[in-house]
Structure formats: structure tokens, C-alpha cells
Length: 218
Image (cartoon, rainbow, N blue to C red):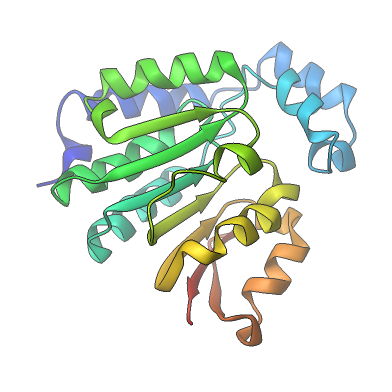
């Protein structure tokens, strides 16, 4: 069974990807103009940029989304954690994998309230809301409590400056074989330095242009 290819999820995802791939909105262009590249992903200034960009999808690519589904299915994952919900495109792919694995729990986090509202609507429309718990607020706080142990798959797709802090926060819940997918890692050199270091207990390879697929080795 492939939930991604069945109603109502297939039509919903097609619409969401079309919206995500549309030219940037005036609000997002304004956000880009009001912030420097350094501000967009540095601590703590990233909060201002992501608040200004609340209408932007900032979604994973179609190829990365398919990879997420495949990883969940192929590993038989039951416990998934996501940093950076946005409007829920990646979340829906992860949850579809859980559905086709027979169930599970997906915890995702987003600090922009308007995006959370839209994401919840998408989860209901896609028929996957029962598998997803979305937490509002700073990921370093929302992901610091009540998490499954161990985590099977972790997706990092929020503020790039938080990739390393979030990974370190969750590291104690990662088992040998846990997979970590990180999007736009070209903006996270400190994160890449860690996961590409065998001495730190990871095996890691780049995927596509700026996605890093890593595994907790021990």
C-alpha cells in the first residue's frame, strides 16, 4: 500500500507542492529584503526572519519528500521527530510512511502560530492527523520533553543555526541505526562537521544538492 498515491492525500500534496513552487509572495520578498543572510539563520535573529516569512512554505523538494517516505517505510519506523513543520508537506510524507507501516507517532514542532493552524488543517485533510502531534514554540523547549525512546528517524528542516543544538538535545534518544535527514545543510557547517566525523558516532553522506543523510553508528 502507498498512502501517498491514494485519496485524499495525493491531491492535497499535489496542491501543496504547486503552491510551494509558485513565485515568492510579496510578504516573503519583503522578509528577504529586511534581513541579511546571516540574520536568517543565526541565533537569536532567526526568529525575526521566520516570523516575517510566515506565508512562505520553505518546504522540502518533491524528491526529498519521497526520500522521507521511503526511509520510514524501509526501516519500519514507528517513532519520528521533525524540527520545522511549516505547512506540513514533509510531515505528511513522514506520517504516510507511518500509516503504511501500521501506525506510529510523529512529533513535530513549529513556533509560528499561523503555520501551525494551516498545518493542522492539512493533516486533517490528508487523513493523517491521528498520527501527528504538533508542538508550538521553540524547538529547544518543545523537544526537550515527552519524546519516544528511541527515535527511529529525525528530520531537521527549521532554522539552520539550530540543527546542531537540536541534534545534541536529542542525541541521547538516538539508537544505532537511527537516520537523520537534514535539509539545506550548506548553511550549517558546524552540524556537518559533527555528523561527518566518525569519531562522533555518525556515518553521513550528502544527498542531492544540500540534503545530508546521516546515521547514528554507535
